[in-house]
Image (cartoon, rainbow, N blue to C red; front, side, top):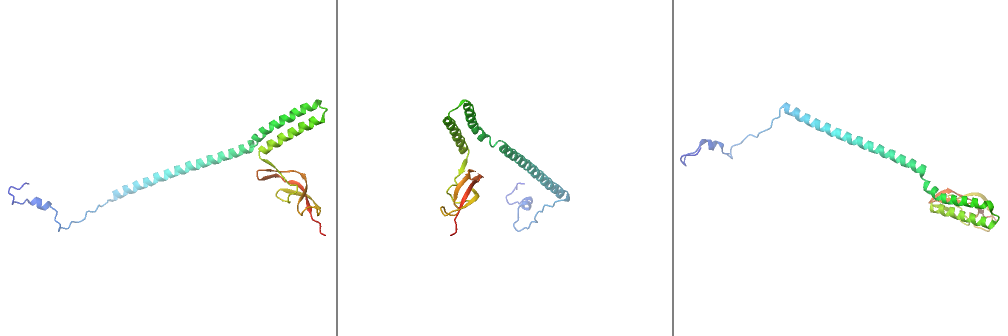
Length: 193
């Protein structure tokens, strides 16, 4: 393919050179029906695999949620069943004090020692309940509040402002901000002149 003479032109080289003026037809890939079928099958298999993966993820998530729900239900039942265990454990010391007082009362003739023993036991009980969150509702002299007090009587009087608690028949108690038992009270009702 080398020219023997520099002036000699090899016709093969001329035919293989790119002529900028010569228009070439674009080459199109023509897919056969068989190739289209294969690509559709590949796409279908990919979609099936993706669907299977999503279904598996969904099933795992549903199982995890079901396990979470069961765990929550067990914890709630346990809390209801054993929630007072801590308070009861604290009250055991008070119970022990009452039992010792009961033993010591068998041979007691001095009323003052019984009174002192009772006061010690009562103070210990109240301290334990306060540590557990129990609060007494202070009603005497306060304005009547139906959320905290239960009026069992109304006394006409001009000595106290209207709707004021003038006496308390039974103490009320709260646990944190929840009323366990309202105070039973007598409320002042101003007399009309």
